[in-house]
Length: 156
Image (cartoon, rainbow, N blue to C red; front, side):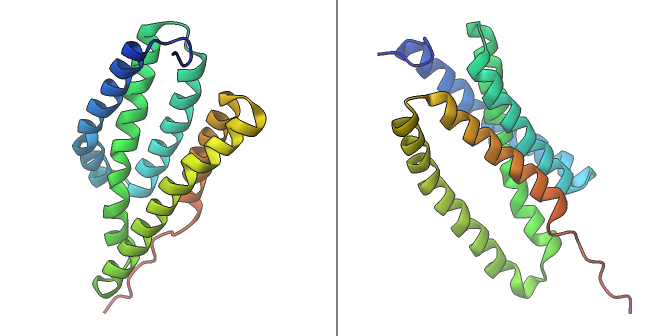
């Protein structure tokens, strides 16, 4: 069995690279401490979007490994959203806001594969599901910039 022309061993190796790339999360956290978390989060969303598309059109094993590392790194960096919650909500609302974000993340992780499977089954193309995934990451990148701008605290 193969996917995208990859054997199961190659697919497993690429998935391992994707998983190990999550170890770059502290680098994204440090960058978000120095820059706006919103911009870093948006950049991570766009990196995910472009990397997913690049993986599909990659013609060599090395390029697929590289794009898998980029996607894994960007997805691992999504931990930045937890710090964003602390930046945008009071301590009294932090638990509720973080809980809601985690809830919606869980809903997305549940519905995303189901929607992707439905798209693949109806269109007979994995490319359409990957395009939908890339569009979702891109939309999240736009929303990270537009929505939830930090309000300045009143001066005492």
